[in-house]
Image (cartoon, rainbow, N blue to C red; front, side, top):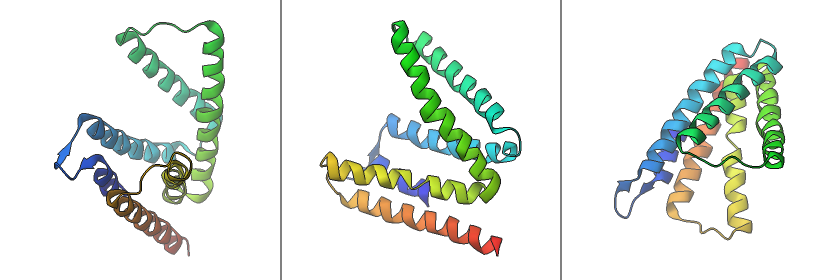
Length: 159
C-alpha cells in the first residue's frame, strides 16, 4: 500500500506521465525495503559493526558517484563537517534503528520509521506553504492505511 502511495505521488495525473526521477525514487524505495529486511537478519550482531560496514558502503558509493560525475573536492573543513553530519544523521540513526529491529521486530520498526514522511509533509505544508493537493491527500491516506495494517498485523502476531 505504501509503495502504491509512492507511485501516486510520483505520477503526473494531469498528463498520465511518470519521469525518470520518480522511477529512480520508487526503485530506491524498493531497495530500501530489501535492505531493511537484510538488516533484520543482522540485527542480532553488534550494531556498531553493522553501522561501520554500512557507512563504509555508503561512503564508497557516494565517492564513486562523485568521481564519475567529476565533482570538485571540497575544502578540508567542509569534509569534516560532512563526516560529522553523516555520523549524526546516518550512523546514530542506523544504530538505533538496528536496536529497534532487534527488540520490536523489522515490520513494527519500519512502520514507526514510516511516520517520517508524514512529519516532513506536515512541516512542508506548515512552514514552506506547500499546497495540499488531491494526490497528496490520497497518498497520505494510503500510507496511513498501509502503516496501520503493518502495525496491526505485527501486534496481532505478538499476542
